Image 1 (cartoon, rainbow, N blue to C red):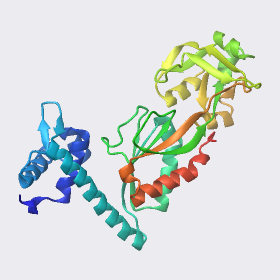
Image 2: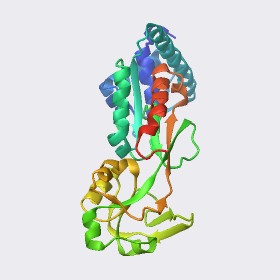
Image 3: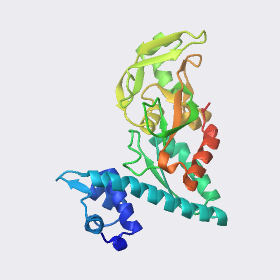
Length: 304
């Protein structure tokens, strides 16, 4: 075994291939050619004298030796990064990258501004923001922190609750002028609803009345969208009504381009959570951003 050729660069490449299971994806992520990634793994295997990956035409997977080496490699990389962060903390200058994944509309309208403020306070830290509504594999995709709306299933990630996002029913004045203003929940059956095709159960609307009683009505309409910003545009265009997060339309409510309907009847709020990869939670720059976002989540309109 010749370990003199084993470098941090090769170890980082190995760890990402182990997590993503794909040489091409890692090459794109590291902005390196696939031959470079392949060479790093080959040289690592030659230095160790073992095969780290079982390769097929579609995917690579760790061998038994590879799994053991991956566990030890993660520990080494974490210790190295922590040492760098500790030295940076002494000098008062944190540096490095934090990768953040966020629900798309929330990220565009509000979280991006929080990240700008974070970078103003910590200019040495690079933030890599990825916007996606679908669930992501944080480890596989190299994400440190994910902000997600809605209930979460069992997860090995560390979870930090940020609050609940209030929702309300809204429509454009132009739509209501043509179709009339609903006076009670049952009136919504005669109105066009803008439904979220990526939200389970959006064909019905559940809300609580002023007496606490729950009302469930069917939502009709001929428009379905899979993105909050598309729903926002559809509301502005007078295509119908929708239950929406307050943060999605707060500016439109303020200037009257949208108005609340049935204000005494409210859909249930939706939890907002922050997921953190456990192995990254102790890294100083990640911990700093986690605390920053948690402290400022209440500034997002409608968060309680």
